[in-house]
Length: 461
Image (cartoon, rainbow, N blue to C red; front, side, top):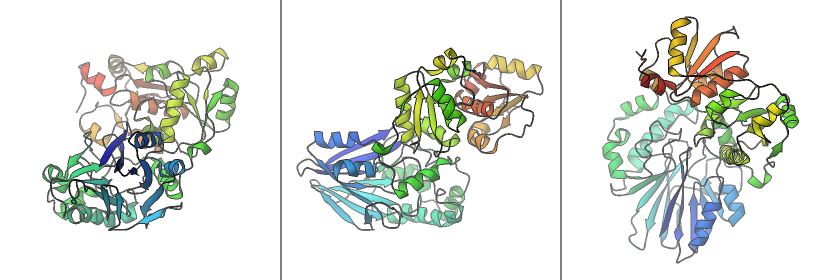
């Protein structure tokens, strides 16, 4: 049996190619939007992709199922009640598929979504018994899928489903069965997913507290507690995946834009996303820009602050960085990227256009500011967990997602405000957002709380 795992860094998405080189056939489970690597790997191993499976309607990335089907002619399979509006074959509990020596069994395991499946895989050249489970977003390495994405009105039902799927549906599989999830570290579909790419059912039963004979009431208490903020674009991704995401060939071409074209598009409502690093952005940026530095996690943060329905214009240090950002952002449904500024900020400046800046304070400078100016506002934009682990006494807590969603209760746009996070990345997102809202005197702490603590100027509770 041929089996290979693929990962999208940053998003933490896992997908799988399973097949039999001798029989020349294969399938893909939970494909990402850019499908070349599945096709290339299958071809290199003498296999043709004939089937595609999505374990559920994904909320954090655009599925590549339609793209892969167009390229290969493979059939798409989705749960029969998932509401998929594109051509597909419905999956039901107990369905079986054969790809040479690889046998797949479909098991309905609702909980993360109401219509999720787990796939049990057997290598019949060795044994008819299942060797591994593709658990989708039911069971992760060290964690389980969050049940809240279907909405508050379904939460209680989803928690019960999740418990039943974990404790009853998986009960028939022995401890030695391997577990391969649809997500790893970096995903927002769990609370604390391990970076390890796989585990065993027995290890999780012993060391994952949520699968270690936990009584339902305790399980319910944990699963109805507050989860990490759901990016606003999650529901837009679900909607696209349910309707059937557009094919990449139908996306508008991303081209170089002149300064005048960028200005016209910005004034017409397009969002300028500047993917340069924090210090470069801080030194000079186009008014109204949002800074989403180019990192593996960039798509998640873009999803926190920009509606996917917006037209986007990118600003980058190079054409290569701009095209890299396009690829990353399209994975999470940003299909309205119309172009990037040719020549970057330097070209904008050379045209005599106005620029703004976001001063980068060192930890020592922040300490001096807080001691000297008692009305200076310090906003900590980290998560609840990070805040609870220690924070500066003067700080106001406002996670970056909440800041963008709710704004801040400061009417005076001339008030001096500093944003701080863990490393300086999120504080630049927050700072650029505040600048776009008209706040004139905004600062970001370079190095964030890490730098603050290392400077040994601890004003932490």
